[in-house]
Image 1 (spheres, rainbow, N blue to C red):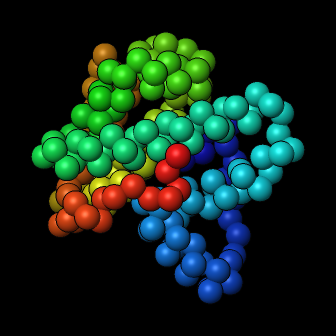
Image 2: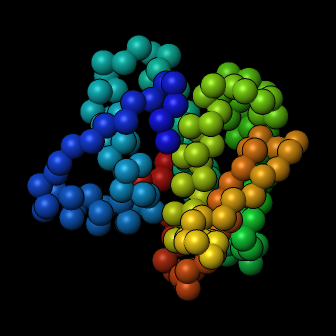
Length: 177
């Protein structure tokens, strides 16, 4: 999803490099695109202004918190098709995590229209889904089903279905901070 503060890029990778990206991203419970984005951000990190570096650090901390919380909720039997919303609510109930989220979006968590909110929420959804190896719940046309909510920091999310993943596959990874 492109927003006013992102740019869509396309490039080719050698097959062996892409195969390794897929392997390493799976080990980190990340979508390959998110894995590559993280690698590119880290490659230019030292050249970014300090404020942007802090924002990237905060975002990575949020992504790791989302992964940990998703695994915790999943392992406690809290999975249903509204898993993303459940985990998001858990994240917002933690004062430290909510404060960090609000620092990144530069607004109150429940405010509508903050420009940094949509891309952050999209990535948090990916991290939550991938942390437990869930998949989108599809409609009869094969498109992901979405839910829409009011009065929440997120306005919509993809409904999920669980893979038959055992809890041992959900151990924290070295990529998590």
